[in-house]
Image 1: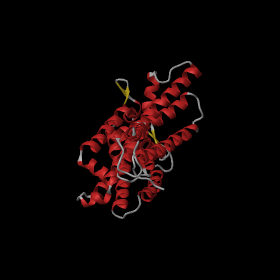
Image 2: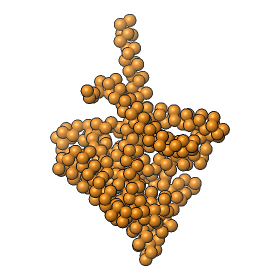
Image 3: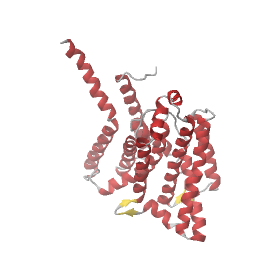
Image 4: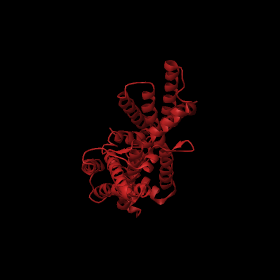
Length: 341
């Protein structure tokens, strides 16, 4: 009898722990049910079982997925990257300007390649500086990347002369708006990046080192891992995914805007947190980030689809973040993990 009394709370803790671990999937399922019922009642039409809606949600999810992948890497290592929004904007204006200039003289194909290479190369600079500040100069990630947020912002506006740069390259706009076998090209590119990052985290020593640094930096140092080098590479990869996002933004809207990624900073962090990663480092998955980004995309597109004022998006995403963090803290307490007073 005593054993059964003791085991019952343990079983409850185990059940709650499983539910907490699956919170992102539960959030997504609940949202889809709510929007489906809302759509059926208000308009008599389906939300979930519409190919157009599903394709639109997938396109909406591309930007937070790509920025979130970079955030996933640095958050797992115990850091954060606040500069990704304007790193994305810098890549957007550089891709547009270089594609236009080179394309005018050497052809649109060469212009596309030149724009992509120039944009990605440019984003590596703020990523490298972020890593250098954090890994070698021991600047806190929040402060170092916040400073780079301002630098990248200024550089993007200077490069574009403070205006949006229109795109005159049809190949670049195809990247943003074209389809292959009915699937948007931006979704295909995002899936390729997702697979690469997933492989990096799950199948390589670099991925193991990333988790180890976030779990226990000192122990990782004592194990002989070059923590500085790994940290610098992580922030460069974060900047690189922001660069890819900037290029796709330019193609999608046929213009490069310096402020392209400014509203997406919150989404990039939210996708990672909603997906189950810990802001203390040491945990997080690519799949979790994808589900988190899909939740954000469903909220954003669903509210637009149902003709709700767009400002409610910020409230909804913010509430989901708060609930996710509360669930994460409860999960830690149930598991006897770390608790901060």
